[in-house]
Image 1 (cartoon, helix red, strand yellow):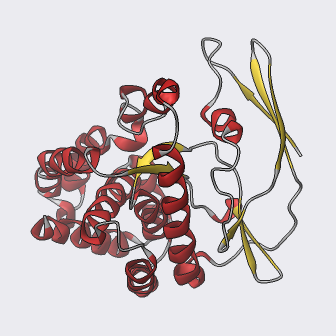
Image 2 (image 1 turned 180 degrees about the vertical axis):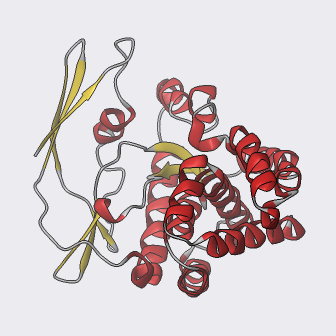
Length: 278
C-alpha cells in the first residue's frame, strides 16, 4: 500500500520518521502493525509503502479493554526504544516532541479560540449563559497539567484513535495510519482515545467505556511507570481533545441541527466537573 505525504519546507514527515525507526515495536503482542516495506523521500514528498491490511472496523466503545492493554504495551516498548537511542538521535526526537510550538499552536489543541462563539451561544440560549467564563478556568489548569506532563517519561503516541485507523482480523487488532504520531508521554494515547469517544458517543456509553479502559490500563501498565502520573497525562490530552471538539462552532451547529443540545449541555457540565479533580 502506498501513501504520499507532501513535505513542508523540504522536511520529512512525522510519519516517515516513525517508519524509519526499525524495531521500535518489535515483540508487540496486543497490537498488530502493517509491516513497512520502505520509505522513499524526494525533495517534495515522502512515499511510504506498507503491507496491505484487510479487516473490519471495530465498535470503538466495545474495544476499550483491548485498546488499554495495547496502548500500555505500545507506550512501554516505544519508551524503551527512545531511551536506548544514541545521542545523535536527540535532535530527531526533539523535533517530534508533542510540546514543540509547531504542534501546540494547532487549532485542535487550542480550545480558547472557541470561547467567543460559546459566549454568543449563551446570549441566544440561556442554558449556556455564563459557560464561556467558566471554561476560561481551564486555561491555567491545562497549562499546569502540561508542565507536569512535559517532565514525565516519553514514548511514541499515535494520537489518532478513530474507527478508520483500526481493523479487526481474526480477533487481532491492527493499528494503522501514523499521520498524527508524536513523541508524547505515557498516558497521552489513552486521553486521545477517550477524547475521541467523548465527542461521538452519549454519556452512558462513554462513561462505561472510560471505566473499562482505565481499569484495564491500570492493570496493564508496567510497574516501573507511575500510573497516577500516566492518568494525569491521560486527563490532560483528554481535556485538550474534548474541549476543542465540544466547544467549536461546527460541533454546536451539528448538535443544533440534530436537536441534541441537551446532550451537549450534559457534556459541558461533565467537563466543568473535572475542574474539581485538578
